[in-house]
Amino acid sequence: MCTHRRECILGDIADGNVQLNQFGEIVKEEWLRTEQIRPEITMDEFMVMPNHMHGIIMINPVGATRRVAQKYRATHRVARTGTGRPCGPVAGSIGAIMGQFKSIVTKRINSLGKTPLTPIWQRNYYEHVIRDEDDLNRIRQYIIDNPSKWDGDEENPQNWKK
Image (cartoon, rainbow, N blue to C red; front, side, top):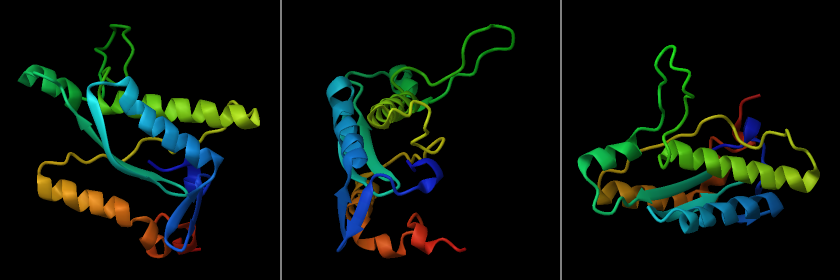
């Protein structure tokens, strides 16, 4: 997930290590809290960077049938024409979890500066379904190494073409 306009509002990188500021600490706290309030998920490796974050979420539907497991894959409902039903993420889906996470982080950060309508996050986020142990380990290592590679990271504003 990237911050709005990819602004570095969550902290800095010094000597290859992340130094979170107050906003970054809020992101970290809420990311960890997500697992506490949702027994169906386990949080794995994550990293809050100055203007984005990476995280692995494992969905653990206990005793899931194929129908239940598919519920977690569908991230958006599509309302039928004329039904008047709202569209939005399916409860418990990655889309719903990310939406709720972004919302609470935004509310907490905005409450500090008394700026209720200031966007914190860029719209949407990138997701990838991890299909095997090799993929999981590769992504974990990418997340762990991200701060040490900040100087060459495409998300680093110093690397943007002017």
